[in-house]
Image (cartoon, rainbow, N blue to C red):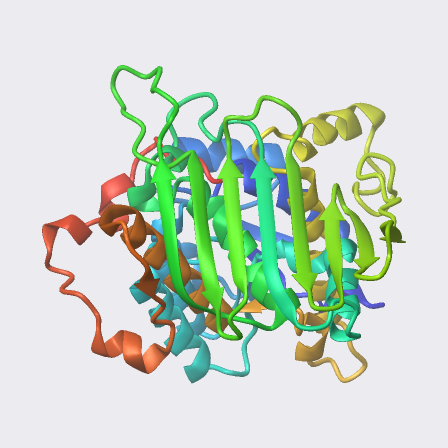
Length: 412
């Protein structure tokens, strides 16, 4: 493979996600040309740590660089839409972290831009799609293992999202909270595996943790439970609890007319209705710490040890990091071809901006349901959303880039 055909990358974001993902991009041959952050201090520090030659606090100085052909957006969610739309408009490929935007109106703008420039890659980092356990679950489901899907149960238990100093994760107005950051992944993976979409939802959000910061109050959910009725009548139950002090735990169970499929700790189990025991269908044998494909080559043992510390942060689960690594591998394949043109088929499993619009529509509906205490119909069609766009002049919706253009934000 010729890594010279890989595009130069501009990074938007200076937080934890950037510090994990940049080394993985570089280890696969991508050139990191520039970095943007909200303040000079954040940009300077991140660029120095990640050995990026150019840093700035001005978006256009990254977007207009001739050496940047792919934009990777890892900053606060309320900034995603503006950067993505502008990048596509000047001919740059876009990989955007989740949640794709602040609300479905923001994501709709991204969808429209991607449709106007279909020759460009425009994907979202819903990385659970790339985990082997979910790939195998989808395959067995398509092969008829469970028959007709009747119920899906998804449970996530993890440590607090609110660690260290105050960040955007603690404010749902700019994209923080358990629903946006974990729930968006779960909404996406359920639809990706089953091929089903929600038609209505009911849910509850709670903020259970009290703030230790006398200057800031927590304004994001750390507990989330919701139910989705899918377009085939199946019911999906999702429970996200970030009050758990142990290791990150994620489980998904799909029950159907002929059997059950279960993902636990990266392994896939199955049980047919006529069987009294479950069978191991896929065993996750890849150790993130030991796999040679995970860490960049030609670095010292000390550097590897420091990188391992970043690979296993308490609020960025190992499974999600593994998904990012596999997504980056697929992205590399998309740009390396004998014809010297990128191949979209290599990233066909990745979530599109259209997928992100559906996910955001469900997230918005869960928020509304938590307030109104009732089932909410999902409006995910782009044309219908346009007809129902609320008035952006409403002060309650005034949460744009200027709101958090300060040093308080660190990207997940």
